Image 1 (cartoon, rainbow, N blue to C red):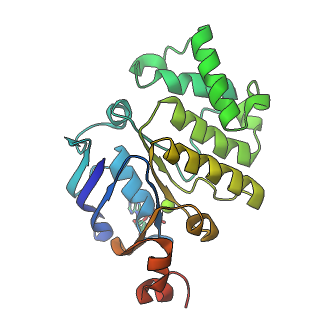
Image 2: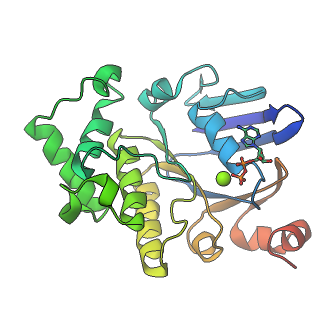
Length: 243
Ligand code: ADP
Ligand code: MG
């Protein structure tokens, strides 16, 4: 279980995240929505360790994460993806996933990347199948279509065997069909017991998918609840749903 209490992240005078509290349990699929600049990515960076919060606590399974580096959080089962996919372009699709599977156990894996025993090959191939990338396994990432790159980033995050998955706009820029496929996969991961927090701008991908929605506006949670509940909130309608 993730427990975020009074999370604050200021950049000089900019209050990017300004006192956010929420909980997220195993098996839950929760959407974090809000307009551009609301603080969604900053929240993720605080949760995954790229940013040190200005104040507040982040606890995972009762253990305080605040001071842990991203790799240490990964070892605790916390993985994230980025709004702009972060993968190694000089490696193949398969190698990216194999490498990612090694990182939580061996921090030096990146500098000492050695391919790779059969076991890691098979595990990585299974993940590529799950994410629909099996036919692209030996392609260089550089030449990968945009949508495949987004799926690869998910495969890379899954390779670490996370129990908490933070997906920053996982379906952004994808065509409708590809988006639906990806979000089905995300939902399945939650059904299998993962805790999933994702950001999303397309309300169809929130309405049909999220067990719960957190609405972030100007760094604060303006509303939370089921999609129906937050859709009734007047602030949300005015500020976010454009009414
Ligand atoms: P969202 O992901 O919801 O679009 P962000 O978390 O990216 O929002 O940004 C929230 C606010 O924090 C914005 O005003 C943004 O300009 C600011 N911000 C984000 N990262 C930084 C940074 N590294 N330095 C300064 N300001 C930042
Ligand atoms: Mg963002």
